[in-house]
Picture 1 (cartoon, rainbow, N blue to C red):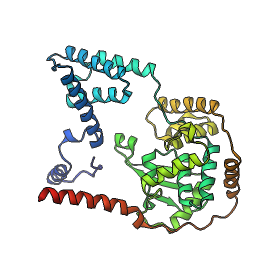
Picture 2 (picture 1 turned 30 degrees about the vertical axis):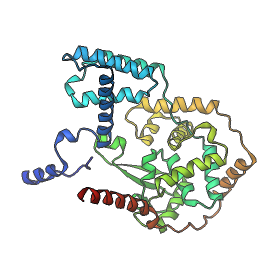
Picture 3 (picture 1 turned 180 degrees about the vertical axis):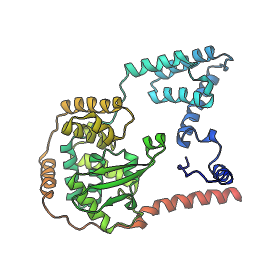
Picture 4 (picture 1 turned 90 degrees about the vertical axis):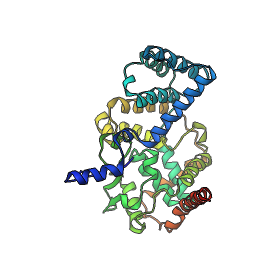
Length: 348
């Protein structure tokens, strides 16, 4: 979806810009969301063909037909997302259907009530410290750095992996550090860019050191697939992998830890950039419940690595490994070259 632009001062300027970004009907949802809705509709029509059914003419009959399809998804073990996408996709394609599918939405509500989503468990701060200690032990200071703002900044995974040198502003090792996030998930709804401010000194001093040598276009996390593999490998090395932690566990763990520190939902709402307090309550209530049941089985190796990280808080930082912009764009160049070769084959 095109970024928000400043309105032109003349009618001609506004018309020119609007021709560039396209008609309003194409701007109602994100292209990725539109593709997801279309896939849900394709699956629904495939179901109708398999059952030898045709679309009815009345909305009441359509409501019953789609409700039967939701029952099919439930019985076949599909995720709740499939049910949400087909209802949202129908209403996106035909807005007049809004409010005309009461049985479908009632079934979806029953689905939500009786099946708890498999959310990423929150990462405890003690495990975070052990993971950072492991990265420092391996000499991967850049990866160690990414874990800290992801946790203390309550960053979504996509936001964390998109941070480049030009997005970080920190003028003092003691902080604060400001990270510009651009149009995030919640920012797009409000039409405003977002940012976070970090005050944790350990995070600020590491970001300050990184900012002294980084090229402005270098990503903090590097290639996405490499970072995700490092995250999984670190969990496995510390025997933390059995709890099904995922990169999003950084955000959930950070939210739970922050609430335990100050106990304010209002502060958490601002830090996590949520639309409603209901969402932040879900994070905290479920997070605290999971942490209460979580029994960390520390090995001598993981325990020692956490101690090493705690010791590093009072020592000077070692030099960072050299940062190369070339290594981050190599994968993109291969992708562009592949697309170019496919285009050439079509032209021939």
